[in-house]
Length: 225
Image 1 (tube, rainbow, N blue to C red):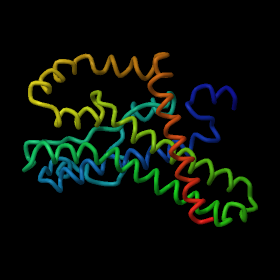
Image 2 (cartoon, one colour):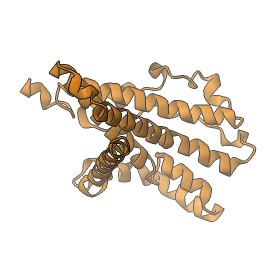
Image 3 (tube, helix red, strand yellow):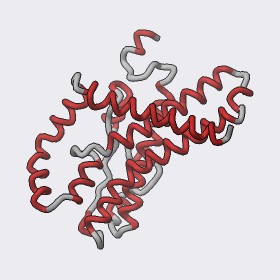
Image 4 (cartoon, rainbow, N blue to C red):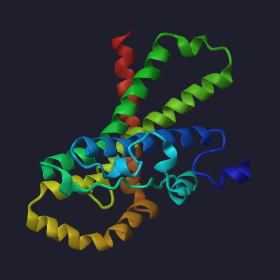
């Protein structure tokens, strides 16, 4: 068991909850992009079968494998033709923001659910400690991961959603300058994620995500105390 644990981002007893979380989080994230793109006049994702909550069509096998092993990875991006939008800039921002906001919604709903389970004594009434461990572990991983995905995807760096939002908000001349930097984006992205610099980029986002989880849970339990 200890040997196998060295190969995965999470210990084996927590790994299934992480995989389940990623399946839900990424599927809802990509579906949200596709849904709002279609709603605003671009049927590209829908015609390609991507406007669905079926996880199989959204996941990239290599990206999922990296998630399990290293804790970071990706899903298949939703194709969007922004030229189909009536109000290109405004609708592009909404479509780009829909993914991260869906993760925020999942995190908040998950936090509220777990806080209420604790506050109303449901967790305490469960005698089987394995079930208690499963529920508490799942909600902890699910909520913190979704808060993290919300913050992480708003980073204004390609290929993240935050970059697409900034791209539509800046002036045309600034947009051209951003496009010139895109060729270096993947290198910059990898440096920020997998080098010791992650202590100053990724680690603070995890800490922020945990603080939001704890803070909102405490607020909910206080309200229903």
